[in-house]
Structure formats: structure tokens, C-alpha cells
Length: 319
Image (cartoon, rainbow, N blue to C red; front, side, top):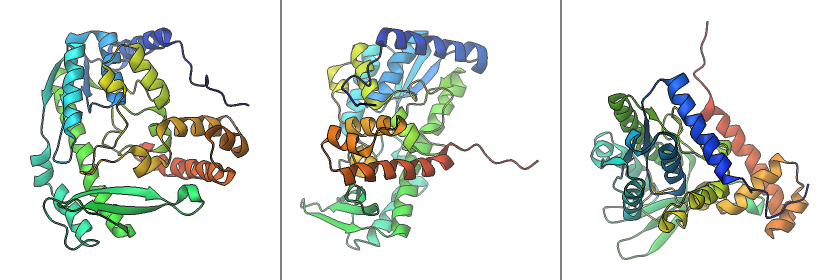
């Protein structure tokens, strides 16, 4: 099977109608809820989901949430407000930083960072980056920090510190989801989940955090398709042109730095190729990477799918 530039083509009018019909059916026939709650990060996925929710039930039955915290980019809230006003939906802004402070999110994270950089203190910034996989080596995580003077330092993370930083930052998604369900209960609405196919397949979500939802309208769409869908629905250019980020760490961090290893457009192609039995040789030619790198990408897809299995498991019951 050959790769070509049309592999992600869709009839977007038909797709919008299909998703809208599915959302309405889910609300009335299965969930028995009056409307939809969407947490809007200003990114393409949550923006497309909010627009689809409006197409499905109208703006008066969609409630938007903006949930910034200490490390959020100001662009996220700006784009989220822009989207809410564009769609004409009611929305609220909840700064979750005080809650995160109270439950120790920032303290646990900073303690782990200081195990690597003892001088780390207020005014420093941080992020985690992934390296090694495309070179055919094991994936390793590095901690990157920036001093108040602008100096960048980096150091490989040991497993204990990596797990503690990730566990602390996962608090952010779980607190956000708690607020989404509070408002869903208050309004008798359902919660919309925003992962796309790439994220869902590869486990790029937090269990009982952003992975939790009542409906997931774009979980079958590649991120490339989500961008195209958003443009087709006429969402603001600032949103449609936004580069995907985690918006979890204080230093700017692309999703490819932290998790996927390739930019989303290439990663979409790699996942499609893997699912359709395209050889590493063909993938390498299409992406203009070496055959060894293409083979490493496929191996990483398999490894992440293995890890993602746990994230999607229902609780194990013993009867």
C-alpha cells in the first residue's frame, strides 16, 4: 500500500453531520443529559470538540471551561476565550493553581527537580523532553531547566524523579476533570473528551484525567484531520494555526518533544502506515528519514500501545 498526500481526506460536511448526530443520540438515548461541557485549552482538539458540540445541540446547551494554572501559557486562555466568544457559548474561567498548591502538586514536582538541580528555586522554569528513540536507542527523558537569567541546563532524569514529576503534573488533568464533572452534574450535562486518534492509540492522556469523559467525538480522527475539520468549520485562524503543546510545564514544550518523537503530521502518517502494514522502507522514503529511524518509530508505536492498554482498562472486578 502506497503512502500519498490524500490518505487523510474526508468528506468533512458528512463527518460533521455524522458526529453531530452521534452526540445528539448519545445524549438522548444513552446518557440522558441535557447538554455538553467542554474544557477548552485553546488547542485544536478541544476547540474542534467545542465546535462540534455546538453543531450538535446549539450554543445554549454547551458550557465551556477555561482551567489555567501557574504553568499555563497566557495564549491558552486567550484562545479559549476567543473560541467561546466565536461560538457564542457560556463559559467560566477557574484558576486551578490554588487547588494544585493545596494538594502538593508544585511541591512534589519541585522536590523531584531539586534532586537533579539542587539550586532550583522560584523564577526557574522547567520541562521534560524525550530523546534517543529515533536513533535506535532506548527512550530516555531529560529534565530541562531555565534559570531566571535565561541559562538553559539539562540533565538525564532517573526513573524515580521522572515518575514523581509526571505524577505531580497529572494532578492538573485530574483536577480539571473534577471541575468538568462538577459543572456537568450542576447542569445535568455530559462531559466531552478531547483526545484524537493519535493520542488515544498511543496513550497520550491521563487516566481518570483528560482520558475520562462521557463522549469522545474525535477519538477516531487523526490530528491532521482535526486541523482540517476545524478549518472547515471556520474556527479562528489563531486556533487553527496553533502548534500542539502539552501546556503542562513552565517552559514551552511541543508534544513531539515530550511524547511522540515526531511532529504530529509525520506521526499521523507513521501511525496510519503502521496500521496499514506499510513497510519501514516505504515510510522512510515518504518521511525522508532513514530506514533505521522508521523501524524505530514502529517499535515506539508498539511500546506506547502496550503502555496505553493500562490507561484504557476498566477496573478489574473479582466475582
